[in-house]
Image (cartoon, rainbow, N blue to C red; front, top):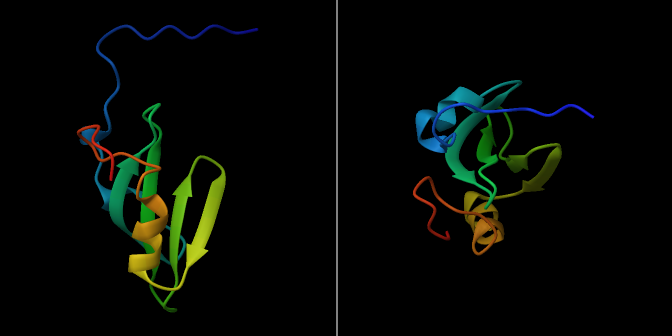
Length: 84
């Protein structure tokens, strides 16, 4: 078992922008976080009208941004730690 030690303040999501997570035909639009501080990105496909919510190794696809935001409501937090 490996132990990781972090020296310094707690890592925060405020140092990232949604655009930092743009890749492979998707543009990052909204950046959220889990209660553990793991980044959650809501991204739009550049060629199709598809939205995805991605965190860790999990990805969920939606047809509109409103559906993606409704999925995130109550599950994830904004950069200040408030429930979406």
